[in-house]
Length: 172
Image 1 (spheres, rainbow, N blue to C red):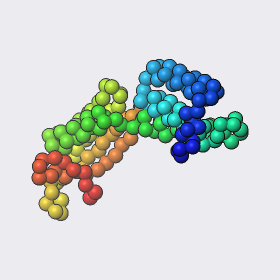
Image 2 (spheres, one colour):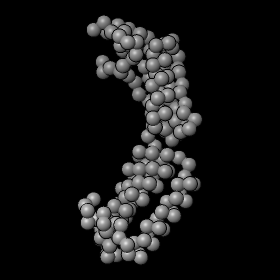
Image 3 (cartoon, rainbow, N blue to C red):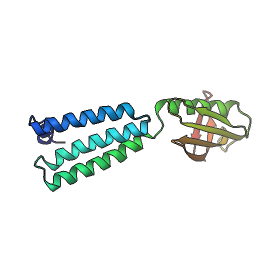
Image 4 (cartoon, rainbow, N blue to C red):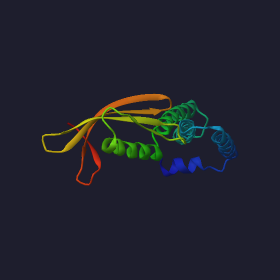
């Protein structure tokens, strides 16, 4: 956003102040009632998109301004939703810890599960028999599931043990 657009956004006009106040009240109340990262991301993205669309579209109430605000709101909501429904840091940490444990310590075909009670996201890791690859690395194929927002995705991969004992995903 350029300097002119930003200064227009922070205008001291009564209409601008009223619009910003109303937006903040709606945003605050919706943030308090939204219960998931996806809902919060959608809301914050929509608000941010509307503000940017308003700054780009001008302040004269024209059709162009309305279209810019609507487009910004929709784009911001979509982007915010996608970010909100992804795995958070705690999810990734739980998944990484269980993956390392499973590849190192779990019998072939046995499934290890992880779950983050804060996000509700979960997953599984099922390692297959170990083997030595062409470069003499100790490797295992595995199946992994990740469930985010009730939707489960399945992936297959290969990981090889590093000199420090950790497992690294490889493309074999």
